[in-house]
Amino acid sequence: MSGLTTRSPNLNPTAQVHLRAVSAHQSCFTCFNTAILSLLHHNSDPSLYFTEVNKLVQWCDEHYLVINTNKTEEIVLDPRSVGDRTALSKHSREIKQVTSYRCLGIHLNNLFSFNDHVDYVCSRLQQRLYFLRRLRVFGVSQKILFLFYQAVLESIMRYGMAAWFGNPSAQSKSKLQRLVQTAMKVMGGTENLSLQAIYEQSVLRQAQGVLSDPSHILYTEFKLLPSGRRYTIPTCRLNCFKHSFVPTPITILNSF
Image (cartoon, rainbow, N blue to C red; front, side, top):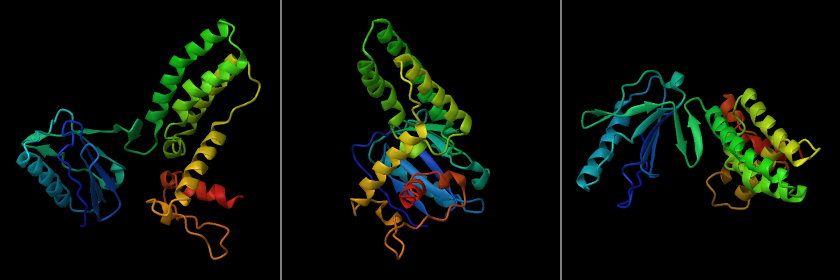
């Protein structure tokens, strides 16, 4: 097992998440509100993972930091591949296992479907549709209505879209699309605004940013073929990876 630990005396010990990932023999440890990422598979030995967790607990104790077990959670990503695992504990207090966790405003569940995040986005859109309707009642021009839509509604959908829009179910995407169509009707628009087009625009913008920065962590994932015109498409065994950020923009770029 190999790992990287990042420690900071200014970390917030009360907002922690311990993540278990799958299908690898390595562990990677990062510091984002104190997060531990461990890559495991069904036959892997979890004792190494527990050892690293104990090291974190010991380090916090030595530096007079208290880990709040009531606010510390563990999420097992793709539990079918990992199998049953003993729950984590800290000083004989069990750490709660959850199926969904919010990180940087994105709701991630343990099956990588992002349906929970779509439900969250739809809830926020429905609240803001009320204000859009009120503006129409007050006789606001269509141009101002569209500006309000872009600033208050569309911005919610665009946030992190390159990361989550590829994997939700068709039912969740349809639910989101209906809310967009409702907003268009409120504004008096006749055009059909496609979320897929917005998503492709978003991933292309992100991919161009990666390609323009050789120091970016994903820069090496975009490998040109010998022709120098098309990119190598990564081998995708699972649909959740096939519809994720790297394969999607590569597919779009190769279609030009």
